[in-house]
Length: 289
Length: 161
Image (tube, rainbow over the protein chains, first blue to last red):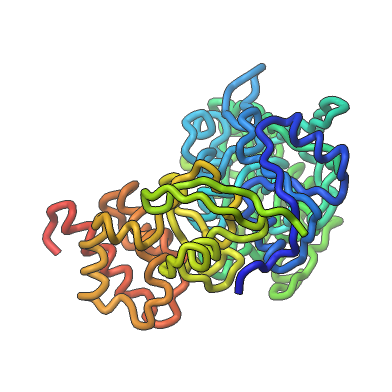
């Protein structure tokens, strides 16, 4: 049963210049390979059939985790397991450390990358919602230069982003979590590691017992991660231990209808969004968030 | 016709140099080119875990890595792990507990559980289940597999079982 994918040429890039050289000459016919945990299945099933695959695993400049310019900068090719194990991430972006154990299984997390997940833009994946909750900035580069774009502007639909065919996501900047910030991550899935039926990445600042900068980013409920603006506004400025949880939950459905998928109706997804929101607000009211 | 690419790596400690088609997965390379049939190929899209092996020390899916990506890498399969004897106690416990019936999932189970025990010498049953959530067994119902991993961890830690 060998040789499932369609034949392709392989380029082992060792620098971004190598990557851009192939992208500039091949455009859409080339595909960059990050951790391969979504691309290789797509190749095996021939859902993707590029002419040429550019392997970025040896591109050192896409790796590294550091605090720079008041932000936590994470290179696109850092693997999930590396991000989850990073002390800098635990201190400055605890939401990411909470979220990663929900992604697939250990052997997948050893190989899959932050940038790969974000660029794949699977509507049911965890990290795009985290990026939205954390107000991350994405740094995109091509041979023509670099541009930075907010997470909210990056996702454009199912498996779709604003990335141009000649561009690569090189790193992500996350604002450093304040000392009094709180975060929450949970998802409802049929089995550990399965795709979520609905999930929530949430964060806020709890100052003097009051919630500020509340961010509620849902995934697996739409064609891209969904920021629940009305519910966020409802929770903003409320006392963490005594807020109207049901009013926040009621606002989830204001101007938003979850998209059903093969297994879960839109109504069930809205119900799960409320369940997750109650859990998040309970966590924010107590000490453990 | 795409030109084969030369790839140099070590497999179970032995240097290997082969020309491979870029589209050849590491799992198929090990099985068909090197005759190492212990790495099993089940779903071929990363779900079942039967092809789990060690790549530069970490457990990965052999079906989601291309052979051509392994230039300079150190690959270890269940054959290598068995030869080194590092999981002999776990393997014996699998036999003692009947933690396998058809055996198809067993190499991946052993590699996954072995990685867990290196990182976390005394995992809870919940942690064992979470680690093995990426390895499907269609025979045993998992109970005896979790038992075998738990017992091995306790014995290694000098605890009563």
